[in-house]
Image (cartoon, rainbow, N blue to C red; front, top):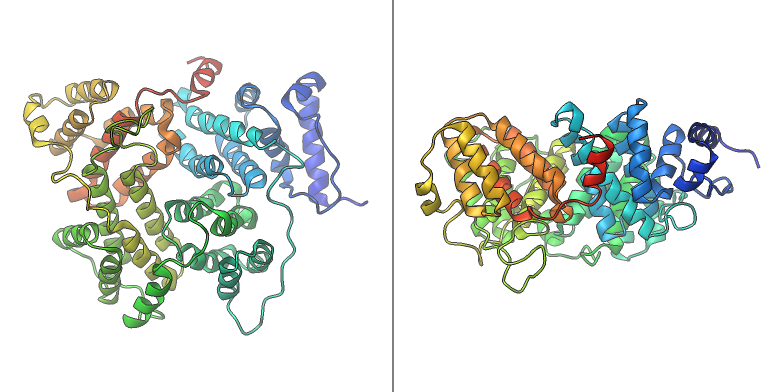
Length: 511
């Protein structure tokens, strides 16, 4: 059977890799387990295919030495991250809890690498690729057990929007139809396909649904938009088989079109009215303290009044940040690494912040309808979490009173000691005081990223670090230091469980 040009190049690339490392090493790495698929039976990825197959077919402990060698011979971290994302998508298809969390960590890990010293730059990427290999191997690794296969488009009705047909298939939990419909939609420009996909993302309030959709789009900066269908279809599959039940029948499904119509937002130009600090603070407190319907209405009203999406989005992010700073922490029955008082991992505050960041980011890259819709849904998603929280936020006033020094270096030294002692209140007070004194933020990021990379983070360390750094870069000076205080708290909470593969990566890099 005649092969496609892409498959031919993939085989050539694989052959060159085997020739480079030798047959014995190739066997150890799993590269010798090559099955000649019939044309159309397997997704392939052109010149990235050899690396993607390496990621899928190699056990984690053997993968790290191979990747470090590739780095030494000139392969860029961007390329490794792209291959890891495609391997994850092809093998797992957005259907495994640890798997889609790992996928969502890959783009943040690459962005983190750009903040690291030159000799340590590979660490965050290698850490997440190790995790990626572990979960892929758990699911069999490689040909034969891949979730994503080539899919044939289904002809769409001429008189109906693709987003409507896709939603019907998702509501019916018809995976084959949904996949075929989205394949037809994906034949459009990637931007148009993404805007259609967002209609099902907005139908359910689940952090994984929205963050997966956002990080998949962001990852296209690494893989190229020619892989948009592969990465975005994970959201279609998650919307049917994800851990939120996949029904798409939450209250927001009826509330959103009602608000879009009530405030005449469909077809309305995006506003440019800039809000004052006091307005942002007031809306943030309102979103934090109200229920979802009230918060959604407040966001819709603000957008209808012509306030810029950035202003409304900033209030949503600030409300989510309050969830971290007012968090009581997990109860005494939690046990294990995420024990009593912990706020890292899948905590209410980390989830709220990651979701708010995703809704806000989606609003920046989508059409006008989805800009309005994402912020309305983001406000709804962020609200209703104040009921069981602390009366006063971190840092406690008593901890602030204990701080005597004003010297930047001394404050950072004490903050690092507080992280290692897992003293959340103290590290929050120290970073709060550091920011109040006007010291440079970069030194705080340099401290906190070190532990975001070295510690396990319970699947959320990389995502939350990037959430904070992205929000800090766009938030106005009056509020941005709250983000770093929150990150300091989460860092102290997660300290004490080194990430799998981190020590091996350090050794291979001779650190």
